[in-house]
Length: 250
Image 1 (cartoon, rainbow, N blue to C red):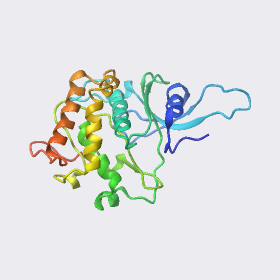
Image 2: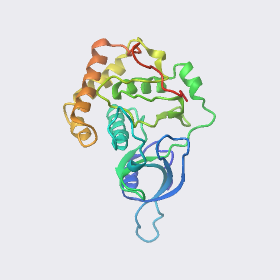
Image 3: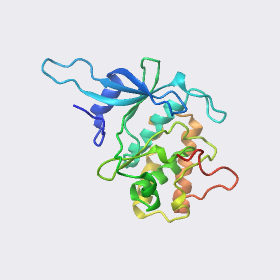
Image 4: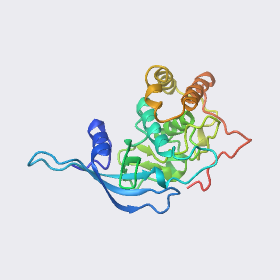
């Protein structure tokens, strides 16, 4: 059974990513941190049961490049935290992601998403695709400092995944994104409803799920960002005192 598309991950896919045997097939050389392309196979199953496999990305913590504005060795956990928040929104933006040991030590393992080559992320951005709009709001919540075009993965059926969330959740404002097209735009009733549920979750269980992954101050800052979005009722504006777009934007 091949789960590489990941449309309906469920607990079984998370278990596969967490417990399956990782085999490194190659490296994504364009990535700034060590990013390994792998297969993951479930532990031995009963006789006559087909092995369960998927393709995934493995980012070992030891391969993370040190940054001036994020603590060393925390990027993998931030990727998992982004998945946890994505699941809480119900928007299925971040592919299934876990922390686990691998051939090169502990790190993040994420289900590989094969994009639809016929879908152009730039065109989706330009026409204000609703799936991209949700990602723009998600980025405002998690304080994404690196939303590039190449981090948007459209798949067949119109859904769009977002990947590479290693530099999210800083306490200080750091939102850098190519998705400023909705700046100042009023949030819809549905979007406000998601934010209200997310804010309640941040006081009712989601905070505990994030505690092993982020500093306490970073969880509190996430709640404050949601509070500000609810109070303003609009998408945020770029801060003129700092870069608004990541470089390179692709």
